[in-house]
Image (cartoon, rainbow, N blue to C red; front, side, top):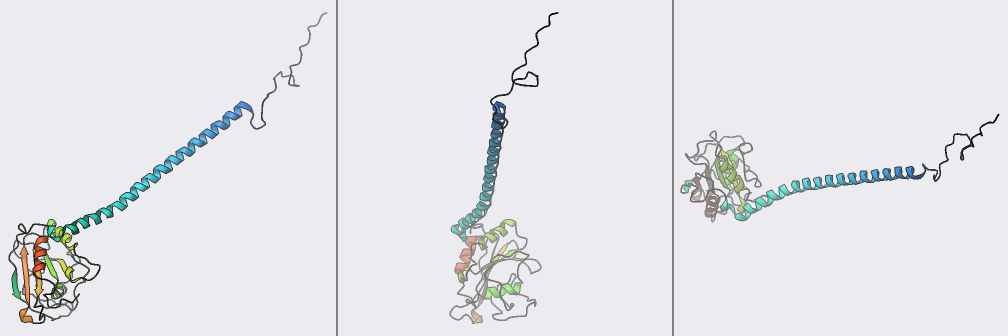
Length: 269
């Protein structure tokens, strides 16, 4: 009986499976597949870092824009105020022709160096006042505009009149346009160092303080004296000018006509 020849064992493995051995491996994942995986990981990491850099640059750009905006706003306000100052007080509010100002009135002044205790209510001859008894201490030189929320007592501000201040009394319920113009006008006067030429205050006057001239929204007031003999009360005057509208030009003219030197106590702060 003839038997079929036995198959020859396949090369490379001794377990008879016939699978050929792998070649070309490096021992670290081996060959082409291992290299492709490393390349993919490296490409992914490169892309991730690039995206991270892009986001960081974008975030920095946003921060720079926001910071620039925050810095630019106060610079804008300063520039705006500088333009107003450069233009001068005369450019603020209504023109002199449109301000509706009455002629200046003069009244005999009273109350020179007559101090009353804090809290004492004084009845003034003129409303708003332009002279009279007052509290021992004036309002601070460094503040030039008051609202109804922070205004000192009338008796305090009358002391400022004695020291040569021009006070722009404004109707407490005056239109916002006029109040804003006065606020702007007050902003043209300096507050950092004492300068007699900067003696200006804008302050509200309400119905509880007294009557305000009909049809007028602002009254400019000064307490004048003979500069050669400032303590002579017989030569002291309370002067006032009532205007329908706030006018920087009217304020300028009024202060030029009645300088600080012509007051009972021009050297007072």
